[in-house]
Length: 95
Figure 1: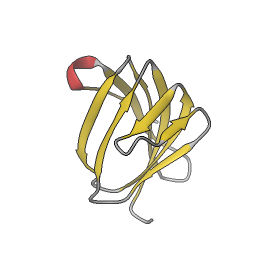
Figure 2: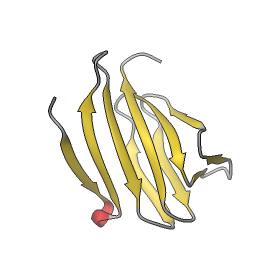
Figure 3: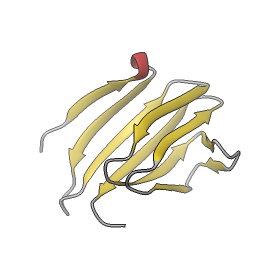
Figure 4: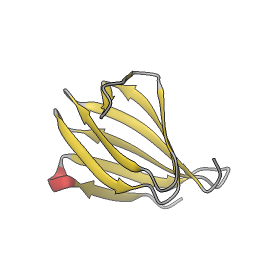
């Protein structure tokens, strides 16, 4: 298994990427603290499982630990946090 380290937005988001046994690309990551995070448009379907902390959608919807947040292919991935947050992201070509 190959593990790829990625750093986003000036280092405030760090992730480790890998392919699981079922062939899905996945990342496990940490968002360092409060702020607005804009990752651009989703190139594939993305399912983000919040492991700790909270992600707040731009519409104000709150997704806290053990909740699933989904982004359709082509939609903007933009949200905010109020503190450190950890997540598991699963990338898929199917909805």
